[in-house]
Structure formats: structure tokens, C-alpha cells
Image 1 (tube, one colour):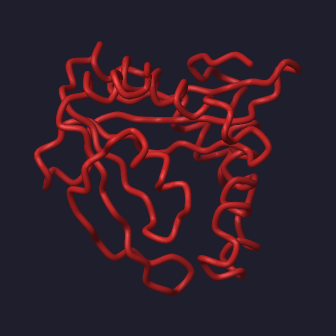
Image 2 (cartoon, rainbow, N blue to C red; image 1 turned 45 degrees about the horizontal axis):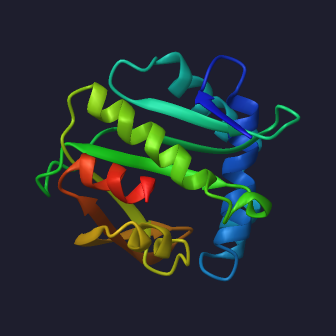
Length: 177
């Protein structure tokens, strides 16, 4: 397994992980019709735009298996809400189900956190659906719950929780343990 910064040509792999992870993680949580409507093509275009924007402020990192297939990713950059006193944000982290629980998620978060530190960010938060069982990942890294909001997915409302680390260095310390 290898982790690296995303590059041109990675959008198709990112899209596959994004859609497939949503379908395994959120089945039984969000409306099935929403999951069925997720499109590899739409996500691929989204990730192409993200990669094309470069890594000046935000960043995308991927994990590959030994065959060179993208099996996970994480992205981060400036915190988007400006409501909680955090300057950085972990926008997304997704791993194919068969690769979860192997420390790959920690490696991806570490890459995003290190990148944020290099860019001058001091703190980081992440939003996660309250019903997402993967939120325990952030709790295991001793994230502090800092806020909640309602979001709409597929015509239904869901609670999202913001977890944060007021110091990115504290997060990095938890990952290395």
C-alpha cells in the first residue's frame, strides 16, 4: 500500500472509491434512491476539477494497493463555515470497505494534517453524519465535538457533527500512537 498526492489521471479512481464507499457506508442510513443515483461520471468530473485547481490551499491524497488501484483518499483545506474558530478542515476521507481497519485512514489523515501544517493552518475540523458508524474513527483520535447542523440528503434531513482538534499537532500526536 502506498499513499501520495493525487495527480492528473486519478479522478476515475477517486470517483470509484467515493461512490462505492457511500454505498457501503450509508446503506440503511440515507435514502436508497439517493445511493442508486450516485454517478461515477459526475464524481469523476468533480475530482478532475479538484485536481486541476492544484494544491496551493487545498489538497487531495490517495492510497493505492499493490496493483496501483486507488482504494482510498482524503482531502482537506481551509475550513468552509468560519463559525467554529478552526482554520483547517478535513473535507473527506473514504476507503473501500475491504481496506478499512488497516491504519490506511490514519495515514491519509496524517498526510492531510501535515500538508495543512505546511500551509500555515493551526487547527482542523471534520464533519460527519451522526449516524455514520465511522465517526468512531475520529473519536478514537480524541476529537472534540464542536458543533452540529442539519443537512439534506436525498430529500431527507440528517444531523451532521463537527469534530475538531484545536491544534493540528495534537491530532498528529494521536495518529502516531
